[in-house]
Amino acid sequence: MSQKDPVATASKAGLEFAKIFYKTLDSKRHMLGNIYQDDAQLLWNGNQYSGKEAIHKFYTSLPHSETTLVSVDAQPITAQFQEGKPTALITCTGNIRLKGLQSAGFTENFVVLSEGTSWKVLRGNFRFHEPAP
Image 1 (cartoon, rainbow, N blue to C red):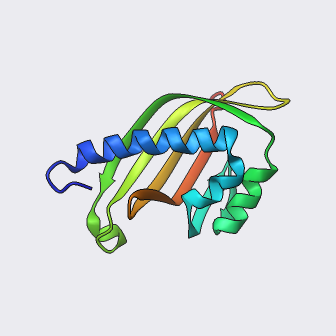
Image 2: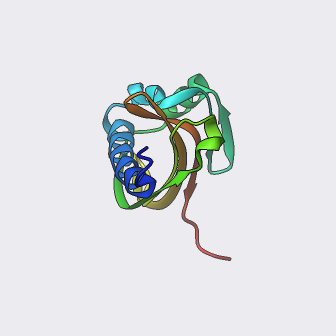
């Protein structure tokens, strides 16, 4: 991330990451594990998956999806968080349609860190939107 304007750099990286992530989720799911670090954590509607292999197995078990992004926001995280590696928090909202189910709104947060020329997911948290009680 650029030291001169880390917010602009995080914003650009967040949008690029979100486009790649959801395109891969919808059309190249077998490659989704490559986006995660080996020790990544995913919380999907309260269900926890630990490690790249478990996350890959979970995603490949889901029915085909069609995702439409509504918004993407990304903010830099202080360099001390991951031993000086550029790190960002990305928040995505949108709609997802899983085959056989009706479309549902969702919010997903990612903590990503720079690995050379790409971003890898360290932590992810996905939640379907549900009506307030």
